[in-house]
Image (cartoon, rainbow, N blue to C red; front, side, top):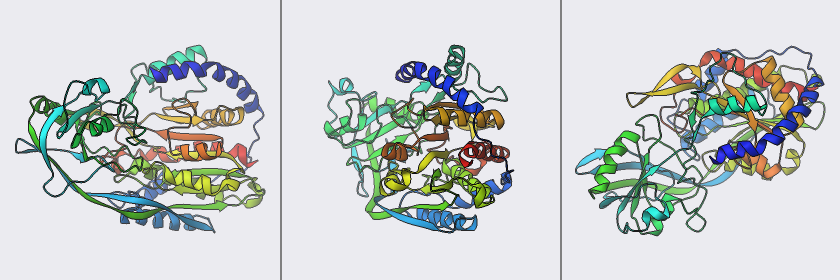
Length: 493
């Protein structure tokens, strides 16, 4: 409901800016030179290259391997001065975890950055607290127990919403050449844990935060059920805010959670184990500049870290950044009005610290950026649930373009989608869901207020070990590259 209200509040501005952007679009400068863009096989090979390890978590050896890979690919594809800039972090690494109830292990996965146990774990009764609101905790004693709670995701009826906005003339544009968006199209936002948002500590946690409510009430540990995930997977990586938390936590899949919920209601005893270590470390932002005729810039970014193999999150984004590098490095400098800053940042899975740090440390450079284009999770397959598992289908997952509500970015996006249509793609205001895009672009926007086009997809498996190479729609990779290049063109002349 909050999201729908935000949509309604944006409608007057959308009407106004659509009129202005249409006028601007008619006069957008035309880039006359032809571009040679990489083919889908080459782009997919880059995705394979960065996805050679099991994960790319911040500060880990696997994460550093990915950083070196990006550094080398930048050099191979036309950047002369490539920089690797360290960002200090605490490296949290889980080594062993389990949940055993009545002598039987229930599949689980660690809640990242939570507290560790010793090898014996925590042995205590389970207690179910529903969603874990203050009211849920009011008449029960969780002290010394292992709390079990549901975590819900908000649902957006995107097809219905876009239909209504189109009727009202309140959508910028809907790019759906195959007619896949219909009234049944909808999406759970599984990166929005409504009662465990993250980004807070015990001192400033919202009243509905189940983790901190349980901790303040004296619970020993917590098990969180992924109630709205369209599978029985428990491998959910979040909240990825980089904030260390004291109480051990485990994620439980939707269907296993049904059984656990019943056992918790009965007060069954459990043994929760989460062993690991924390140590100081670093991650690295990798960046370089493709110079143009002036000292103004376009900025194209993604992030290299991933909780698992990360083919879509964000091997796909990294590959599309490389595709733009190869495309525009093939254009002589005298035909590039502006330079391009290419950044593959670190720590999306550490509160987007890499993006924030880059923007803070390069304030003068950010002032010269005329448009930020952030590319994430593009070319991923849609999935549905079948037999408690993800079933990939041969069509792209819905993507959105968070776009600054000003005439030139809006005209650029609309023009690009008309000239090079992208499947299942809808531009929306950059402030629709939050004060900044809910993407890796947020760090740059918050720190520098740079105009933004943040193109991002959100298939259900992004934070999951099932984000693997088979989820990439290879045939869509080159068309996506062409659409991005179309967005760059007006800023190059």
